[in-house]
Amino acid sequence: ANLILVDEINRAPAKTQSALFEVMEERQATVDGVTYPMEEPYLVIATQNPVETEGTYPLPEAQLDRFLMQISMGYPSKEEELTILDRFGSGNPLTDLKAVCNKKDLASLKTAASAIFVHPLLKDYLVNLVQATRNDSQILDGVSPRGSLALYRAAKAYALVKGRDYVIPEDIKTL
Image (tube, helix red, strand yellow):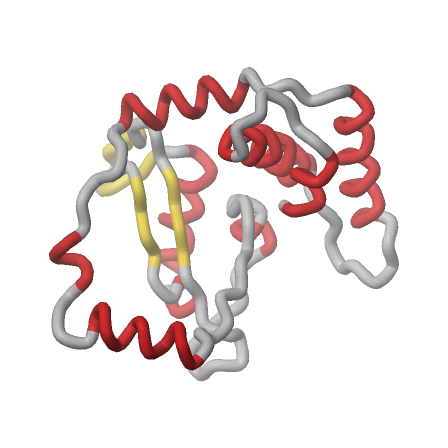
């Protein structure tokens, strides 16, 4: 698969976590001694429950570092929840899913994003932010070099989505 959705990743046992770590880090999966490379594009999305929920385990830092972002969804507003009931209360939304792009489209977008210009001063700004996370006594683990590269690439992709061929400071701040 090109897109893997791992639901409630922090409920997975150690063996499953190990397999996920291999596929996230090395972009390959080994089953019964046979290695299967993942085909590009490749993306892992995961959900997790709060750590205080029974039966959950904190994810290792090395695994968390493989994810680009962690987003807390929170609960929907009353109006949003009513919309959810109206849209999905009588059917399965998965049966109506349709592709919005194909692998070739994604490859083109990835190439376009890599060509987005980032001024050297913005690169310096980004690295200063990352360095600050490593030197703050209130932060247990600062952003890794993998994280700074991910933020850099995400800023370029965000600028592309916004219709620009260059990154602005607000792109980095937003991300």
